[in-house]
Image (cartoon, rainbow, N blue to C red; front, side):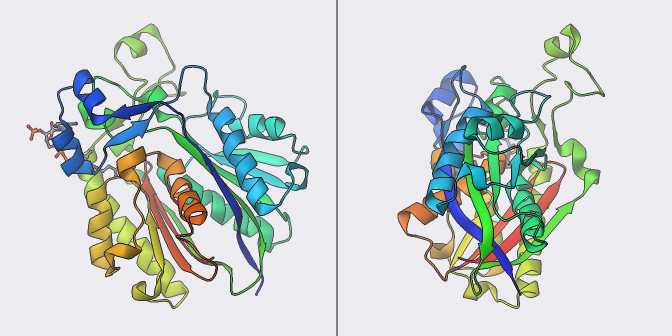
Length: 326
Ligand code: UT7
């Protein structure tokens, strides 16, 4: 069976670091609370002139270079983002223009924190059907633009960041072994931005009511996240007939260190096989998994032949998993 795999990765983080001490100056919180309840010590914040597409282009260039693929060889660009440059046109159009890629197919995908895995799964279908050879998938978020820095339950969690992967044909045994995507709209009101869409267009009133900021029912989400991440991990492992103990690396979405620990324990994966960078970057939504992936590839933590399991959960709610052999 032919397979699709990741040929190169790249990441781009804004330079500005916001520490927990900085957060203590903004809201009634403490380094002790943030560290013990989330595992986060600092996160990045984009400057006023940085945009989702600019950072995406930086990350994409690094991924293309690692893959040895020219932008002119791209057949498809998928940008997973819930914080686009503009409502219209798609951020992927700016990425295509910035990279100097041909007038290939390019679109945005909105699946929040699960978006990079959704994008990879879509890319895999294009590659396996021969519709595309090389696909750029970007997970890009500047969530700081949607954060209410007077709401301590959300502002300490989210950070900005972007990462990309170039997918293409892979030679077995390397490549994607199993993938799953799920959405359950019954939990749509657990994590959302009330205004700015067609339901509640922007107005002076929506701005006054702070309705352009992220609202989150974190406690309820926590339980759904642990359950979904465990379930989807088991499903992709079962599909590929691989046991949790056989995997070499587990990269969960970096939502909360306590979620990661709970899922790891439930799956029976040993702690040293789990990658976590939440202390340094916080929750970067759809950029979370590809940033981890890029760090693992560049540091040598992920080596050719390794079995890597990735699992994500986010607003929607959405959740997904991918098992691949590097
Ligand atoms: O990215 C994917 C989607 N997101 C998630 O999956 C997020 C999942 N949820 C979480 O990570 C956690 O629920 C949070 C980190 C958001 C919150 O942690 P928690 O342990 O669930 O706290 P809580 O919401 O149950 O709040 C406990 C207390 C409350 O005070 P009272 O009512 O007990 O007096 C909060 O007001 O902690 C308070 N609190 C804070 N205290 C200090 C909430 N945020 C803060 C804060 N600093 N930043």
